[in-house]
Amino acid sequence: MALMFSIPDPEPMDGILSLKGQCAVVTGGSRGLGEAIVKRFVEAGATVVLTGRGLEALQRVEAQVAEAGGTALGVQADVSRIEDSEKVINKALERFGKIDILVNNAAVYQGCMSLEMTEAFWDETVDTDLKGAFFAAQFAAKAMVEAGSGGRIINLLSVDAFKISGFLPAYTAAKAGLWAITQSLAKELAQYRILVNAVCPGAILTTERIAAMSTGKMVDQQIAPFAVKTREMMMGKFKAALESGGLANRMTNMMPLGR
Figure (cartoon, rainbow, N blue to C red):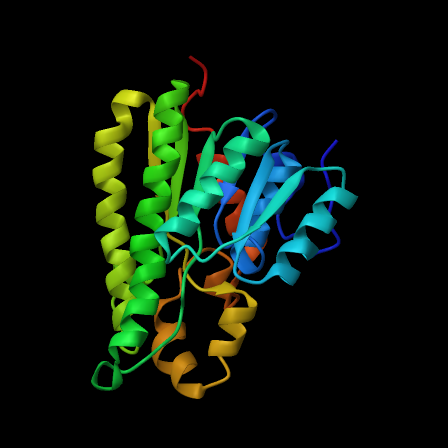
């Protein structure tokens, strides 16, 4: 039976593919799209380790999953720090004995004019969105290779990596770099039956997006022109977080995991 959460769900649950018996790590899983992915995976039968900077949000998602009959472990971590990424993977291995899936979702999304960009602003964005994703993938891949049973790594990109706009120079650079890393890892890790993919959503209605929309400049010049033109968005709607969460679920089933 599918686990149901008291949150809006724009997509039928019968489309979910089974992840029963698998362990997934989702970075940035305590809110927004990451939270939606966590709940989709749990509904599909996976055990999930989720990360976030805020302990309260992690505990909230953990409690919701437990109430629905699933299993999730929240680990407070800042993936811009390499030691935190290693800690997360080690926690997953200690608690559940394996890692089948990694979703690199954690990201800093904030706009800034290039002429106003500071080194601290740049580093915060790139260290989280690019460096953090790479080293999380490295630690997870090492565990998958050692286990010898293959695995999945899914990197969350953005249309901003390909349809470049103003106001997001650090973010677009990081996401474009992550696309290159995705392709490199896919070629390198294929010999170990580790499938590396990327999900590239457009504008998703999350609390972070709503905050960004509070300024007219972000809506008129950055968000609206580069929204993904899905059937729903052609009608002027933003894609809901749970909808993209379902896409991540499907991508885990593109190649068998068995030995």
